[in-house]
Image 1 (spheres, rainbow, N blue to C red):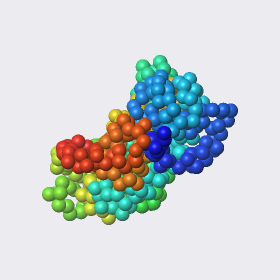
Image 2 (image 1 turned 90 degrees about the vertical axis):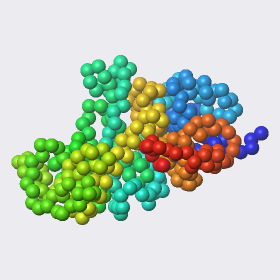
Image 3 (image 1 turned 180 degrees about the vertical axis):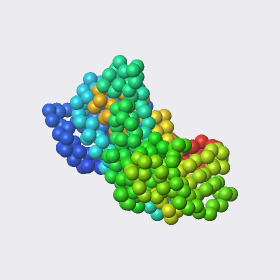
Image 4 (image 1 turned 30 degrees about the horizontal axis):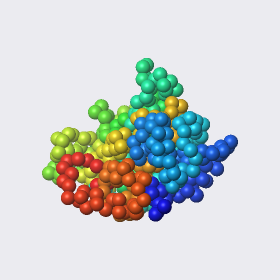
Length: 388
């Protein structure tokens, strides 16, 4: 007797199915499809992410063992590894990329007022990439080195809530700095990145877009000091200067003045030389903004540890991108659930609870209540976590 929805079904109720079907129609996802729909494919792949399935055979065995429960999970078709493999191979990955963007927009609205450590009215984004290693024999289309294959996950992370606002998956050979050409800069927003993105012609586009940049300077930067500002060295700021680039090409590419902040991190004793085109924030705030860039590194570490984006269920370009985008959708979905249910658990704890309770027919809040009380009494120590 059905006494209610399973936790998996309750979780999927947070998804806007109407928007999903719009994405399917946009890319003709159901062309010549008779049974295993794109929605079935998404739910199956989301189930695999939430329960840490290792392979297609693993997914098939687990779902077939559930018997009649499969229908109540929302999956209307029989799941076989051949059918799922074919769906991942031929159905346009952009269906799941567009749907992930719908979820991202929703999550960003929910976390719009969250604090990220710096008192700032404007939006702040951290840009970086991570390399996902692949086997060259199985993924010859993703050749990266002579004996290595890889894809890169380029991410622009909204620091309010650690939500990926913009994601691009490229071949491993694509240099990070080229992704600046694809970004549309939000006026007044801060863009924070490491010195791997230091290309003054591209950085000038940020200035022209009325946005602000914060990045590290290279050790061989040639500049002319125009003026210096007073600093409080007890805050870690060693100098605060207004400069103009001195190199012939760099001055042509970026003709406007820049601000150079020399900062000593009191914890790591590491010296950082930062460049920005913002002249109103304090030097310490500029340094704190750059330190917040670490959140994007934590995001990459988190999804690699807790989602399935290092071992893939298919070997084609389409299958890899489909799996990565559905993994991102699951990450953002859990963040949405955490906010809308006002949970005080970490994302890690939420995923752990979901992984063992998906088939239970109990209110979803009740599943988290016991763990929520217990987690409040646990000392996290020095462990870095997203969504503490």
